[in-house]
Length: 437
Image (cartoon, rainbow, N blue to C red; front, side, top):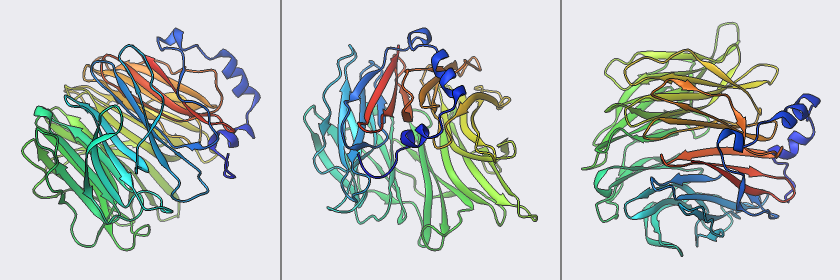
């Protein structure tokens, strides 16, 4: 264990009697339809970074994470675990030369990954590559972008005919690359102009033929510039975006901090967190969403006098959407907020799924058939709420495990099965999971 305290360690210091009572009354996974928890990565002495998940339509799944010493820069080693459709879980396999798996997904060729690497002693990422898992290692690895600095994000979006869009962002720019039917990517195109410093990026398939890449950017030194504009580019299976459009600009003094994109039928919706100070010096924060259009209308989702963060947006194949975020009061208490939107209807009223640990964010997935799964951590328990996008309803959140040391809870749904995963433990952390048929 390193000298840095994990979220679960910090939670030990303020477990209340109410939290312990809630733990004793928490429903079992079986009551909620989930499997019993199982190990994706067994307990060990090194830290585990949050898992990235992918679930195939067949029910097969994969989880990628990094094992690292948080006090030693450049010590991360990416590992991959697979779970067969029948439920057999493989041993974790190190990915040679990979610090982090940035995104992954299943195609007709198998499991495809976007990976980040960096020289010894440096944290990820200096380059981003694409490759296919062949059961032993990465086959056909191809460097897409190099010369990066700082943290990098990437999204892998699957289109028809086996093509994929890779979107990559770092403080030096946003790039997009399209693969051919053989899986090889063409040369990436830079979507940002000179002087733009990207702050957040998201990408999503709009249908089998098209996709969107959306990002925020500002001018000025990285880490100090205040992004006030949302940009986007539209891709098709024939190629990456040809140019960037501006969705909107916020008023002076406002700042866009997070970004998420999802399909809306054949179009797209972008959601973001926005903060600003009023003339009295009071801080305001809320989530907003707008459809991509020439004159977008903006829908506001308040944080009820507190701070909004952790925004996620997901949609089913028909374009019904689920917006999830965290709202925190000034006293530190936080709740998960959810808003549903039908295929042809506006967002409904925001509802609460209950408390979430202050240092955690929610995660949401929507299957192509419209099943909603929202997961998060509450008093160290991995929690999950299941609903229907087309039906416009979501159930109560239930505990997936009796542990009180869960954090970094995430979920993916391939339609036949959903996989939730979370980091767990303090002295000997592990990665655990549960499956919803």
